[in-house]
Amino acid sequence: MRKIDFYILYFFLVSFAGWLWEVGLYLVTEQAFINRGAFYGPYLPIYGVGGVLLWIVLQRFYHRKTVTFLLAMVLCSVLEYFTGAFLEWKWGMRWWDYRGQFMNLNGHICLICSVGFGLGGTLLNCYLMPFYMRLYHKVSSKWRKILCGVLSVIFIVDLVWCLVSPNTGENITTMKNDVSLAIHNPFDK
Image 1 (cartoon, rainbow, N blue to C red):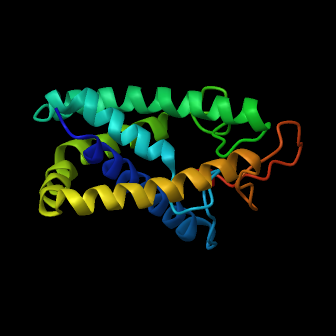
Image 2: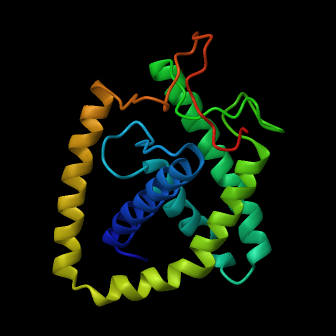
Image 3: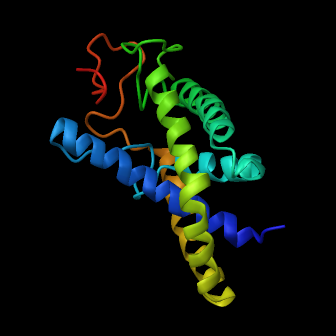
């Protein structure tokens, strides 16, 4: 059984990688820096939760890439759907909107993103996890604990702040009843 710091650090690593992915995607498609997500820090927890969940559930399929792809596609799509529905219910806003995409479900998920989740989950579990494991074991237990503590405190402060006043910066969210949709979907051209 893995130590808790293994999962905490992996959560932060994948959350940061997800933030980089989305910010980079919007830099390329919209030529603008957009701090994606409800948090203010450089992380998207939905990616971290998804990454940890995928590793816990799918590690036994490490050498079966097709199974990993299909299960990652389903698990991440379920996580994306319920996270999007919760955010809309809680704050009346959408941090993403796929209503214009092929095979979308209430605008919270769509086929192209689900395929992307499958590919991303396969990349994480089958190719990047061995690199992370080597890196994890190179850092002493003491430093891993310190890093977990510092990152967790920063994250908790950001979480509390986000619960009071979520990041609703320009081009991120839209009010549920707003006729002029403020979201820019990089896949919608």
